Image (cartoon, rainbow, N blue to C red; front, side):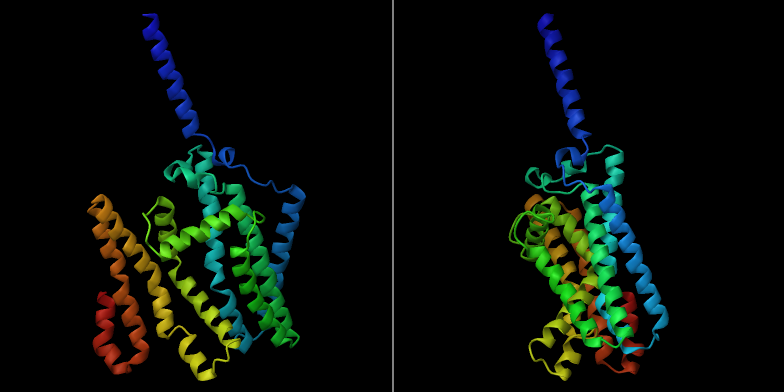
Length: 311
């Protein structure tokens, strides 16, 4: 009887320990750098100031001004990406408040590098501050006719974001940055088994396909300034009507489709075939959307547009 009681008591302890582990908050597993209240207030005030400067500059500039158009090309694709960071932080915070350890759905090796909601909000704060500061400086320069300086610092913003993403070391969320880049690499070159992190990031990338394609156009324009690309080649490649834009728009759906097929082949989940078909339907839409700019208006309205709507 004593042995049975000890065995049941041990099982009870094990179940309680498992429950505590399940409901342990993510920041208890992956403690991060704490932002001081003074630093947070300074960041929020700076964000508000640069946001007001951006609005005032846009208010005084003519809407058909050439540099307002350039401003949209450089900065509008970044808005959904920053919004994704903020919404990610809100999502993680809700799970944390309900004491549901969302890290359990990830692989064991991945759990130690995933950020808690405090870290995600820090990323969102600093990303917002950098982009708002750059946008306000761009518009301020154009108002006082320093157009070349405005464009060069906007280009420097994208260079900074890329360098920051691949910068070595553990500073500025080094482990998280390396994990993000390695996961993105696994998605782009799908030679490995699909993990939950691969699946989740690929799903997010498909939702951000349009702003990512717009960012590719910005990268094309920046590269053309330093490679001696002529104006005719620039207008042909670096715009939303080019084949390059269509390819950049289709890539996230192709990556996600390959993931679905790989999961079906390895695990035999038939639902993944329907999921793959869903992502495949994006390709005809992208193709006919690009074909609109390569055919006559009569052909588009009379033949291609009904097919595009059906797709």
